[in-house]
Image 1 (cartoon, helix red, strand yellow):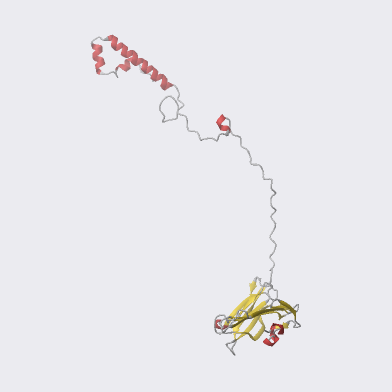
Image 2 (cartoon, helix red, strand yellow):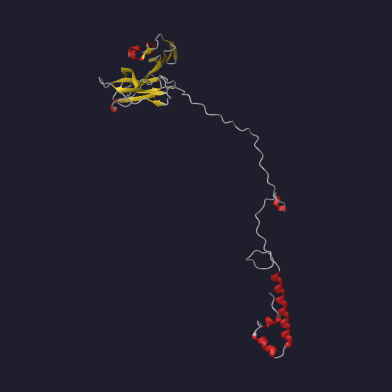
Length: 283
């Protein structure tokens, strides 16, 4: 809304009124003319739409800050950037193959196992599990302290049975020597082929130290001795010692890096004794 010069007089200072009373008409008219011109300019400026956003002062709009563009950007020239799709990969997509059913790689793999027999824990020296009869149920071999002699150990082998949870497949007395000190305790293990290994040794008493391994495989419903290994050394005379390893399945053996052949055949573990050891391995 524009104000007339009559209304504008109401806003003049009081001393201007005094000047009007003193008939200084020229000065007053000049002031009125200048004031009227200023009001006209203000009215024109207020009636013109401004491009500046609300809250900004002045007639010149302030340009909004634009994000920095890379030198090669198409936006620097004012053109709208074109949306480009990423090129499809030229590498062939790998075909997803269904997982095949796992097959046990050795006799040591099994989906379940038989229950541990009720044997006092203080009597158990060593125990291992393996699937010797091939029914995907782990069987157990347990080495216990002999009731007759604390220096002897007994071997118990339990196999899974369809008609019952487990059955005692083998019970052998005095299968390995046992001492009272660390380094003289026998143990059981299973080799990569799934055969049972009976370990005994003397690595603590006296100067004559030795170790022995009896390897028994499960075949045709029984455990047979298929391998024998013996080694010894003198802790005081390092030049004294030797090793002997025999494969009873092939009849071939090695003693102190020298090959030999033996006539000893695989034997049922139940019938194996110290007298059954290959004579070629005597030192």
